[in-house]
Length: 303
Image 1 (cartoon, rainbow, N blue to C red):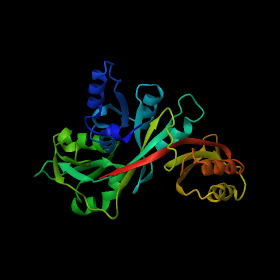
Image 2 (cartoon, helix red, strand yellow):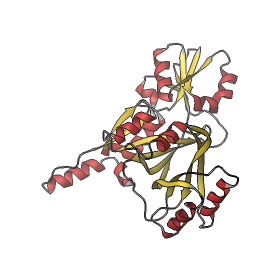
Image 3 (cartoon, one colour):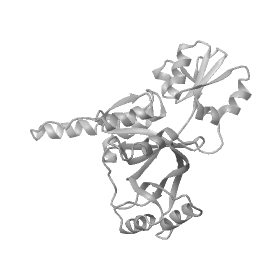
Image 4 (cartoon, rainbow, N blue to C red):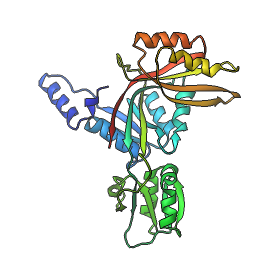
C-alpha cells in the first residue's frame, strides 16, 4: 500500500498510463471508514487515499471490520487511540475478538491527526443544547460549562452525528470537525476550541493481508500469560533484552474467564528484522499464544 496512492489525481494518472498501454485500468480501491461524512475518520481517510479510492462510511467500527473481512472494502480506517480519551476499545476488541477466525484482520498502516475541535451552529441563537462525541466533551467540557452554563451537554455517537443533530435542531450547536460545517449547512462559530496540550487521534488502516516493512515501522502483538506472579514482567523483559521499545500496551479480560487477560502490545520494529524474530522467539518462552496482528509503517501526522 503506497503512501503516494493518496495523492489527488494519482488514480487518474494510473488510468491514463494503462490506457496508453492498451490495458484496462486497475479497479478503484474501496475504503470503509468509521462514522459519517464529516467525522475525523472521514477526514483522515480522505487525506490518505484522496481521489484514488471510493470512501464508504460505516456506522460502527465492527461494520468497518466486516466490510474488509467480507471483501466489500480493500481497507478500513478506524481510530485506535485519542490523546485525551485513551484507547478506543471497540477497535481493540475487534482486533482481539476476530483473531483465529475467518474474519481476522491485520494492521497495515498507522495514521494520526492533530484534531482541531470547532464550535458549529447558527450565529445569534443562544444554544439550549450542545452535542458532541464523548471524547470532545471530555476535552472541552469545562470550557462549555463556563461559557454556556444554561446549555444541556449531550453525547452523540460521533461528532458528525452531533453536527447533524444540531443542523436539525434550531436551538442546538455542536462540537466537531470544522469540515462538517459545509456538509450540514452550519457556520463555524469558534474555529479552534482552546485545550491544554495536543489533541492527537491515531488511526489504524486495517486489511486482510499483512504488509510488513523490511525494517522500521511498528508491530502489534497479541499474547496471553499464565496466571502467576511476575508473568507480565518476564514477557516484557523478553522484548527489552532485544532492545524492542514498547509504544502501547492494552489489556482485556477474557469474556469467559474474567481473571485472565490478553495483552495487545505495540512495539517498534518489524517481523522482517532478524533481531525482532529473536525477540519473538524469547517472548514465546514467557507468554502463551503469541501472534502478530501486523507489522506496519507509521505514516505522517496530518495537521
